[in-house]
Length: 337
Image (cartoon, rainbow, N blue to C red; front, side):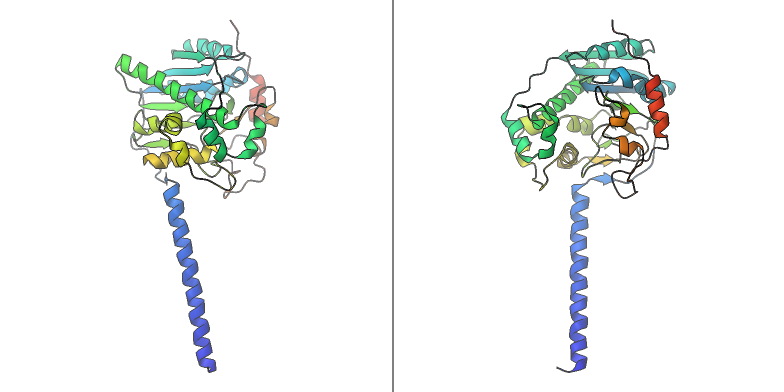
């Protein structure tokens, strides 16, 4: 083989290698798009004003005694200022902290907010569904639960609370003959730092979630959706996993699944869209019981440590960490009746 022929062979080898790399990239990109049904549409077709809005709280009240000021300021106040008719629904756990729910609802009822609450005792059991979920879940999360329990069982309990509070909302819709134009799912144990953006009339086949901290899936700590099939599917995850057998269809990951990945997978199973444009700058931080905000798992995130626009540590909030902590300290405790 002459020098010219050898050059031709090398060039063909390079072209073949380049084609393989391009093909691999296109296949990977296709899989990524299919497994993460996000949409980049950023347009509010019709702003909501004077609408029926439901705010859903679920599970343990935990630190609501300290976070309630941020809930009122950054969630309820913007809704009421837009002349929306706001209803708050709670399906919580009856424990030593559940009085906080009643105390807070007593306060916001003075603002003209309609309030509905149901409390129940919790009993964690090692069901077949919980054991099947635990087999595929991140093992590192087990260190967060008491000895004898599994994180999967606790997660399923929270999913059941979510489903129950949605049922409470739907019963009110049916009994009153109304439809909620927007439904907000919120946690009571986080400090909200930015005002809820003006609401828009949303599609019934999409949910709005924050884009930050997706942890390989979608941020499952806050949601806005219109009353309809996407919302019911999202909040029906417990029934889907345990009653309809989807827990056996969950994919395996070498590090295990987490709630964020499961929710992304679940919405993909239903063919619903995940949108992030409405909540792209809506930020909040978890506040643990008996701990300061400085001890929060979100403390580094709140202080923009190690953040780039390319990782899950990127914080879109312009509110200084010092301002958040100072305002939290000024929040008076709820009055226990």
